[in-house]
Length: 98
Image 1 (cartoon, rainbow, N blue to C red):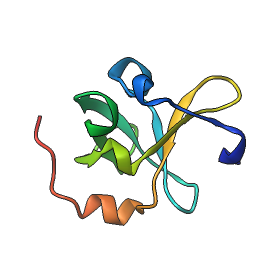
Image 2 (tube, helix red, strand yellow):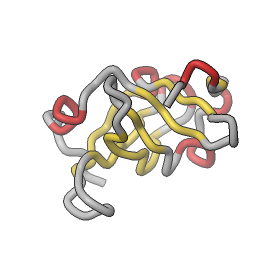
Image 3 (cartoon, rainbow, N blue to C red):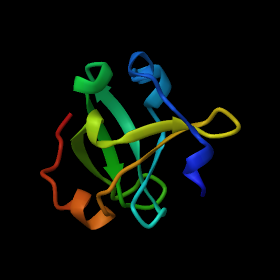
Image 4 (cartoon, rainbow, N blue to C red):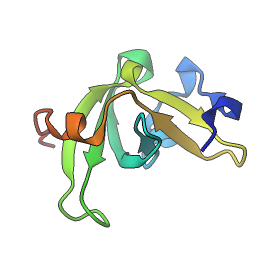
């Protein structure tokens, strides 16, 4: 997927209604998880990602600073994010307990 033509979200758009459920793509552009929910809003928020698993089963929840993700909208308006972290690096983070 060519993210260069996608529109970055503004800081005021970094809220639960916009980013929950968003797919997250790693450095190799593979889908590595999705945003389960947010703690807070804006650049200081924490995004809880479900990483790995299959159809939601066996996924590990990890918390990551929103500032370490690049949220954007594609040509159809769908929000997604990219990160420089790999799926394995995310899976190595401590598990987030709800």
